Image 1: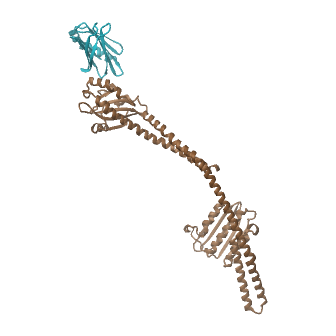
Image 2: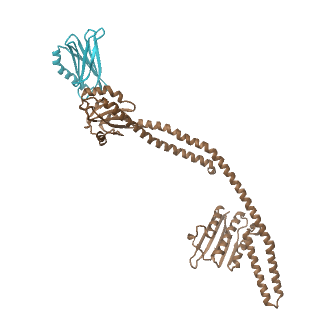
Image 3: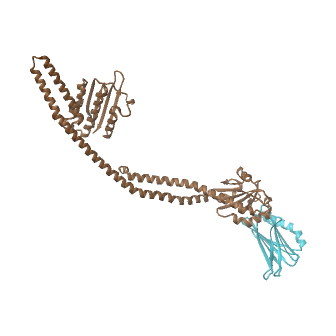
Length: 430
Length: 132
């Protein structure tokens, strides 16, 4: 599935899905549009036929069932009524009598009109509905439309002034044909537009992707160069401090201790010199810890244990009981060891700044193919559930660091009296 | 058309037209195929008439013919359907037989359709009736 992370492939896949959605939506919309259009056409045609063809041609006597009037209507207008998609014609009297139909068997029969038809007779207008082919007056339409019939009716008037119902029947599959016509019109437009869009944008996406990738590589190179330059500068500063100030402090401390031993008979002065010497050694340890902060030690050369001793030195100097136990780091990848050191550094720093602990242990050991770091203190702890959103105590940074390396970081802390403290556990797969 | 309806039409025609035939001194003859009825008779003059009715897609095709053996005679004719004038017009005899014919379609209504073809010329009257 690596290919699926390619932005161009993702774009084409999204385009394909969009195409399917557009086709489906177009079909759905065009179906509705076609139905509406076909029904509107049928209504319009029925209205025109009723007003312009049937009504002027209705002879006197039709409302009373006069045979000659029926003959006249049949001879003069039938050909002009069965036009287009019209499959059947019926003219009803208000009492439900079929005054005329091209199916002559119906003429003279009486069937009850439904409410909609009576409303049209009373108020005029045009209405349309799917025919109920189970009704006896529609028995001759059963063979016409396999998919049903659409009946449209409108009001006309006889020469005697009586309202009549003019009804025209259309096959439902004609609506389906209309649907197909609409779809044939709109689908190529929709698909064509989308395909053109994909064709036009795909090269652009390809170009942009390459440009973004190239920009990313450039940024990565610049960042790496900046990090290397920063590292080099920090190495230089650390080396200068170590070779200069630290050595001077060490020499001064040694000289003062030597001088104090010579002043054996002057206890007060010797004691003050010894105190100054201790102060210098404390300053020297602090400075060495600072050097570790400024630039991480070369873990490969100096070893993880020595580095952890250095990083915990300020806590030791502050009177915290510190245990450092490192096993199983031999042969581990440099990245894993570096991650352990970084997390340990941050965890120890948190203990020093926030925990107010009396004891702290830093343990590194191996569990099969996992390198495990545990930093445990008996400090005041905190409630992980109420930790600040910015990742107080640097926890968020630690988690991010661990996640980036595929490691798992767990932080367990409690503020309960007698059980307070924090445990930071890091598991680095090897 | 159903056989029952054909039989009823023949009986009705015979019963109804018997007095008229006597009055016009005509001797109508009739015949019918599977779905048509043909009737013939004499007019009050020397002419003869023929009336043919057959069904066609829910309609009745009515064909009236006047044969006077003289050409150029102008006849006025009327076709009544169930008593109402369904069609009327004029026709002029022509051809070797001196005849004219009229063909009209009427609606085949429920029940028996009463068709009456009447043509007149200079006092001659021809009347043919078919109950179909």
